[in-house]
Image (cartoon, rainbow, N blue to C red):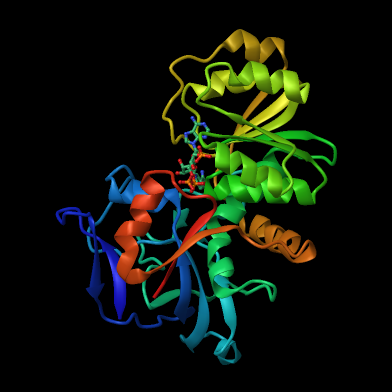
Length: 332
Ligand SMILES: NC(=O)c1ccc[n+]([C@@H]2O[C@H](COP(=O)([O-])OP(=O)(O)OC[C@H]3O[C@@H](n4cnc5c(N)ncnc54)[C@H](OP(=O)(O)O)[C@@H]3O)[C@@H](O)[C@H]2O)c1
């Protein structure tokens, strides 16, 4: 079968290789992948900026496909089922945080950027009917992260004013969609005016360009104050985000695309009763809750572009350069 593996000594750091088809172990299912999607994590792996990297591992955490074989102890009636994969493995029993054994599909275990994958049978869920293969593949990792950030950690309420930063990003897209579905008023930030316009066309009330020096002043004036910020960039923008918040607001961050903040104004944080909250992916219960929300509101992931597996380097480069609006999908 074809698969995209990490190969750090190759010019583009990833390679399309002919690989043996995986074999179902006990408790596993073999899935013929119909579509897979990229996450920034895949690009961090390519850049060598992810822990415990191993060359030769198939990348990719997100995928959807058809069950074609089951291992010992797995219900054979699953064969033929159209499914998507929850890439969060071994969350454990504590809803507050993942266990030490927690792992994400696609490094160190084999990922979804291939024609076939084996996963434990408890990682698969029926594909929501309203979704195409590409849309189903786009949902799992980013949808789960967005759901936990917004609903579980952010405790979003109808009528809340929510600022979603970096709206071009995969997770940010889901945060905005879910927040609108739950009755919040959504504002966005982006480096690209056309992405702000697209977000407004999809229901956001207004947007701000975070590369403008005075964007937070504009944002405060225009919004009157934000109740909940969902951010995946961190870096120095984290301090500016506090400027747009109402007293008592929550700032939930799930990533650090811009690295660590150079300084954090502690006084702003405590005097304004702000809550700074970290989150990562989500529990199995959160995954089910996220799927319920998507089905109830008939939501569809926003797709940026679909590439054949052979053009994985172009797809990864698009993500590296931040040109996407929504999810980048690869089909084998
Ligand atoms: N903790 C977790 O469970 C988890 C899960 C998923 C992702 N993440 C992390 O979260 C981050 C985003 O992931 P993703 O897959 O959504 O990435 P992505 O699709 O590549 O999106 C990255 C986006 O970041 C935005 N951005 C860059 N600099 C920014 C800044 N200074 N302020 C605000 N936004 C900025 C850009 O938005 P514009 O194009 O609109 O400017 C860009 O499109 C990555 O660091 C990723 O590793 C963590």
